[in-house]
Image 1 (tube, rainbow, N blue to C red):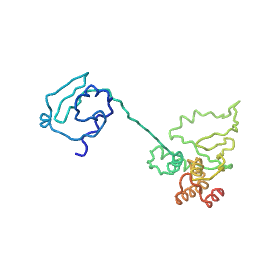
Image 2 (image 1 turned 45 degrees about the vertical axis):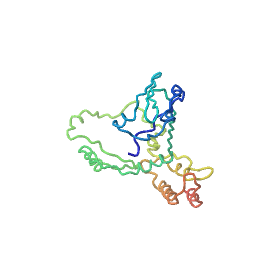
Image 3 (image 1 turned 180 degrees about the vertical axis):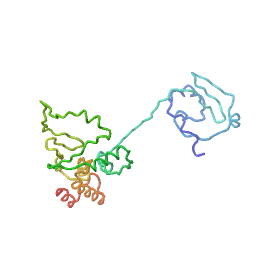
Image 4 (image 1 turned 120 degrees about the horizontal axis):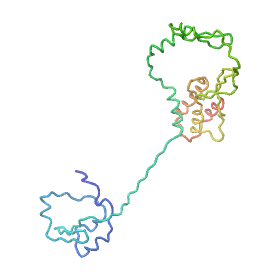
Length: 251
């Protein structure tokens, strides 16, 4: 057995405790300091090595053996356990994870009967008007005769404001203009001041949030540049090569 147990005692003991037994010849003069187990003895041998001498002072016992006096008992120790916890994370790596998560192909779930009917209805009834907008018929149920009798012939709504605000609506990083029914993107400046490193470059690329892939013609160029950075095996804070810097500025 290479190791019986941990060092004993587990923490240093105040040496003043041993002054009570200073007149005795101890089997281990350094018994108050943690140390490895020297030898393991069975119960049959223990009775042969222990002698009749025994002292008890303030809860600390001293028993005589053929090797010398052995100190036994409880004492207040001084713990010197030091714990050091350290956690390190790279923010750029978490930002780059968005690329892999957005491009991951999810499991295809089969359509329910209602979803299939909705899809077929859209394919069979959608059209585009003169302004280029899509129009889809309302999916009335076959047994809708009772409902049609409730529809008023006069569809005019008096004092109703049909104006559309010019304010934009921001959803998933996309700006929707209700007045023109158009989508747009707001992208902050990608110009980087100072030294262009792998860390700053990848951090800037990851800021472009495009969950629907509408900016793929642009972001695909940035992703190709990312592949080149890994190809050259640059460190995070290492300055990128001049040809890569020129390619980045040309995007």
